[in-house]
Length: 363
Ligand SMILES: *Cc1c(COP(=O)(O)O)cnc(C)c1O
Image 1 (cartoon, rainbow, N blue to C red):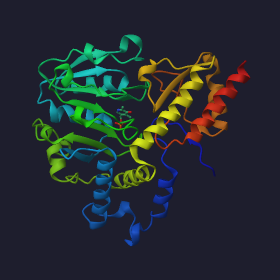
Image 2: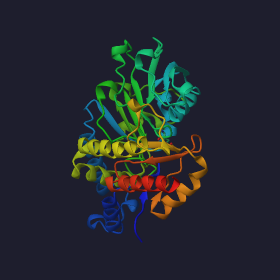
Image 3: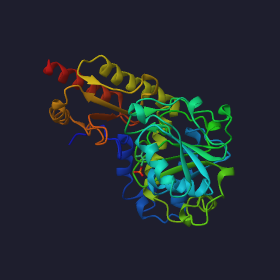
Image 4: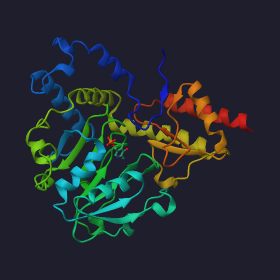
């Protein structure tokens, strides 16, 4: 059996080297006589896996010493509740709506805080980013939330907003689920960043939270203990049993990233892959991507066939060539190619070749 090119938005493609290593270590991890999934999370074997993963991630993302890395569960959606429970103290919080994910976050926060909209790109169908100078952030804001890569609409912040320059002292909360580790992070602008692992880091089940330490310890009384950042941090992410196998696989991905040049090299590869695909779409008479060029995502590329009656034929032809999961999200329609870190240039090239060939057969 040969492996296809998988363009799924998540769970998503994994580096093949990582899958092979995990397979080789499945029954007996480093002579321990156990699979990682059979180990106690408090045993010395797993602690060593955890500590290596934490320190590799800290190095890769250049996380400053005053930020804590928490390995949690519940995914990005759970963080939509966990963040306000930990940071809002029931006060007011501001959201910038740039697509489905920030919309969801804003709605959920309303259960725990006064959840306001500082700006929204809904009027143009979420194809642009409202400029930070236009955001209405309250003076009483406990935090400002953005989704730095909108997985469904294909909109990405190529630079994080500088809230201090806007005269705002509130911390910036960033949902970076779908582009974490695809580019460097400017931590001087961030209070907290969170993301589910299943887009760019590893298997589902692990949720990454990176939080400035002065923001820890403010949870509302009804916050579940397992979701209280202080308890999680005080117990090195082992207040409850962490998703051990997902942490192990993510750790292998971190080693793979280091071996292949780290985040800077990954960013260059991602720029090249995205350029190849967008150029093909922009130079075609059949396909269109509607997102403002200034904020097109390097990770998630939604596109439409101008003749939508050809959608099924397009997908069937793609599948026959081993180009999988290209159907767009049902809320947007059309197609979507997710080209995360683990998608090789050859995969994007194969997609571009197919796009050109399919367009020719339609002429
Ligand atoms: C996938 C995704 C989520 C949701 O993650 P779950 O793990 O399903 O909760 C949240 N935000 C963004 C930007 C995502 O891409």
